[in-house]
Length: 37
View (cartoon, rainbow, N blue to C red):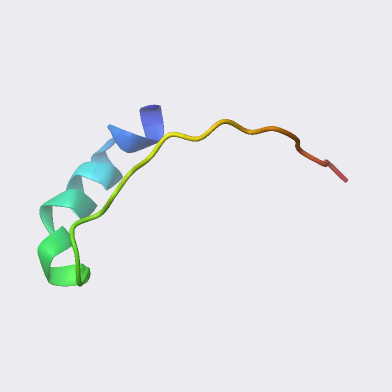
């Protein structure tokens, strides 16, 4: 959650209409499995 509320995220969201064709859609997901090296 911290990466969505930081300074970089705020700056990107402020310029979202200039940088993106559509408004960003942020969805939470559950990780079912992960494989580490």
